[in-house]
Length: 278
Ligand SMILES: NC(=O)c1ccc[n+]([C@@H]2O[C@H](COP(=O)([O-])OP(=O)(O)OC[C@H]3O[C@@H](n4cnc5c(N)ncnc54)[C@H](OP(=O)(O)O)[C@@H]3O)[C@@H](O)[C@H]2O)c1
Image (tube, rainbow, N blue to C red; front, side):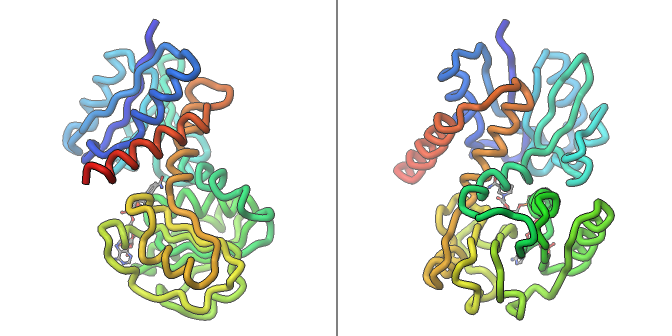
């Protein structure tokens, strides 16, 4: 019997997830189809009922529903509970289980570029939904996490939540400072740069050995990432995070290992096509 998956969000037309997942199903001969549906916030509850009624086996959740969907689910995994956000739902024995693969997807995307996590220093710029998942996942790996956000109260609340889970975290002012020294991993998680705008401040003085990641993947190189590259840092954009959050969602649904290279290729082809048609 064919299985059905989808991603829901608003807007959704630019989602690369259907192409990535369907390429994987085809490669492994899995009888499933992955769609995308625009769901306006006011219809979220009806949409969730509808997906269940139509026999969907699971779905991904993107902006602006990642938090609101929680009250419509039966159970959360520890990852979703800690992040306070759900990006993956699985229907299991009639129950709606909410999971979050963003944080561990990020960890998987950088693990080959970092020489271990434990005791190392990570600085996160931003304290929104994406930052939350990443911060918990890095703290769980034993990193010392320092969080800077334009609205400082949000960074402070996140630090407190990490402490409550036994992790190590601090917060600071959203501006250049002493934190630029001895950084192992710097992660830009704000939406500044998504529309080509410059990042609010320079990161001149950053440790040259730092791995610098901007979780934005389109544009492929933000001004922030370009500056880091010019300062001699190793850089990565957010495509790896997108890929591995998808791979982990796949593994949550089907078990086994997702065909990561096929999925990566599908993502890259879609982005290339978009650049050509711009
Ligand atoms: N690669 C991936 O798989 C992936 C996954 C998820 C998200 N993302 C990307 O991550 C970014 C954030 O997503 P999100 O879900 O975390 O959004 P969100 O929950 O709305 O959080 C937005 C964050 O950006 C900050 N911010 C926005 N505009 C800013 C500006 N001009 N200057 C300084 N800070 C600013 C906000 O600070 P305040 O708290 O002060 O408002 C907040 O920390 C987006 O670009 C999204 O595309 C990528």
